[in-house]
Length: 607
Image (cartoon, rainbow, N blue to C red; front, top):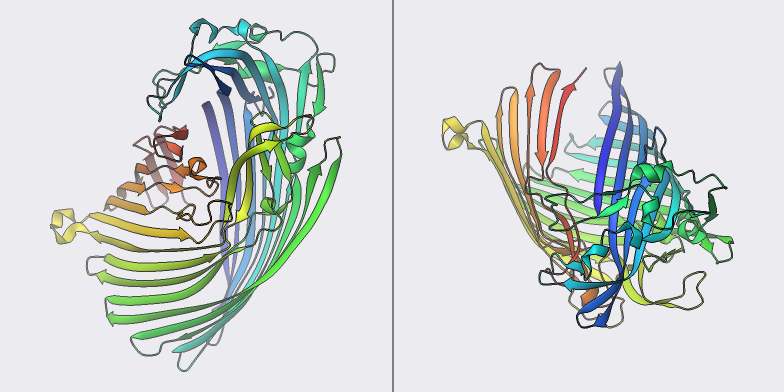
C-alpha cells in the first residue's frame, strides 16, 4: 500500500477569568478545532493464494485506488473531516476555610468522510512464485513478468462509494467541597459528578455497475505509482487508476451507472448510544505527624448505557436491535506518605480503577466483509474491566533541581477485554454455500489477569559535574512489567501462559536537553519491547498478533524572540521506525507501515 496524505489543522482557544471578590473567581474556557485529512491510497493485493504444484502458486491480483469525488472540498481524495468544540464555566470559592470548586462543560465532536470512493481492477489465475527467504519482507513474483503491468489483463471488479458520519455530544457537571479542621491538619473532601454522552454513527455504502465500457484497465486513466527508494523494501506498486479519473466519474448519472446500496457493508456498523454516569466520592486527609500523611477515599460510580444497533437479515430488511446495560462500582482507596528526611519520601497506595467497554462493542451486530473474508461480531454481554492496584514508591529530591525515584506496582485485573480472532466457515449474505477460512473477530472478557513490575527514574541538571554544563539536563526512566492471564476462555488455551494484551515487558524513555534564556533544544529517545496486541489473541499461538519492538528518536527546539513571539521546530522518528506487527514469531511479518521522518516548523504568538 502507498499513501499520499495532506493534513490541515486549525484551532482557536480562549480563556477568561473574572474575580467576583477576593475569595470568589469564575473561569470561562473554550476551544474549537478543525482537522482535515486528505488521503489517496493505492493497494496491491494478492488474494486467495493457492498452491498448484512445481513451486507455483495461483492467485488473483487486485489493484485498488481509494480517493473521493472531484469537487473543491474533497478534491479527488478521501477526506476525513473532524470538528471538535468544547466550552466550560467553572468557579473557585472560599467560604472561610471551606473550599468549593465546580465546573460545567459541554463538548461536541463529529467526523465526516463524504463520497469516499474505491475502484478495483483484478487479474485472475496469475501464476506466481513466493520468495520467503526473508520472512520479514515476503515477495510474490510473476512467472510471466509481462503480465504484471499490462492494463489489458485487468478487468473491473467493482466501483463503490461510501459516506461516513459519526457524532458525539458530551455534557459534564462536577462539584467538589473541601472542609479542613483540627487546625488544618485534617480535612474532608467530597464531591459529585455527572456525565451524559450521546453518540451516533450513520454510514451508507453503494456499488456502481457501468452500463457500458470498462472492459479492461485501458478504459481508465492510469499511472505507475512505484516509488524509488521505497522505505518498506524492493516492492513495486505498479499501475493504478488515477484519483482524478475516479473522482471524475458521474456515479449519479443513471444513464452511465446502475447502483445499489450494499446493506451488509454499512447497516451493522450504524448505531446510536447514550451513556449516563453518576459519580460520588468522599476523601479523608490527615497529616498524622510532621512526617506521616494519610488519605482514605471511597468512590461510587453508577453507569447506565442504552444503545440501538442494526441487524441485516439478507433481504434488504434492517432490524433494529435495542439493548441496555447498567452497573455500579464501589471503589475504596488508601494513600500513605512517610517523609524520611526533608528531601526523601516513601509513598504507598491502594486503589481501585474501572475501564468501560466501547459503545459499539456492546451492540449485537454482525458486520461482513466478503472481499476480505472477514466477519466482526458485537458482544452485548461484555462486562467492565476492574482492577485492584498496589503501588510503592521511593523518591529523593536532589539539590541541583533533580529527582530520583524507584517504585513497585501490582495490579489484579478482572474481566479484561480483548478481541478474539479465529478462523472458520461462514455463509455470507447472498451466498448459497459457506466460505472456508473466514476470519472472525469478537470482543470477549478474559477471566482474570495480574501484573507486577518496577520503575526507576531520574532527572537532573549537569552543572554539578562542571559549571560549563549547567544548562544541560538529562532525564530517564525504565519500566519492567511482567503479566499473566489466569485462564483464557478459549478452547485449548485455558492453561497457556500468556501475557496481558497491550503490556510491554520493557519500556525505556530518556532525554538530553539544553536550555539557556530564550533558547531550548531537546533530544528524546523511546524504546518499547514487543507485546501481544489487544486484538491479537488467536485460536492458537500461530495466529497471535504482536506489536513489534520499537526504538524512536525525536528532537525539538524553540527560540523566544519576545515574551509573546517564538519560533519552534521539531523532527520526529529520526530512526524511521516502522509500525510493525508480526504473527506468532518475530520474523513473520503481518503488517509493516513506514512513515519516514516527520518535520514540523512554525511561529507561535501568545496574546
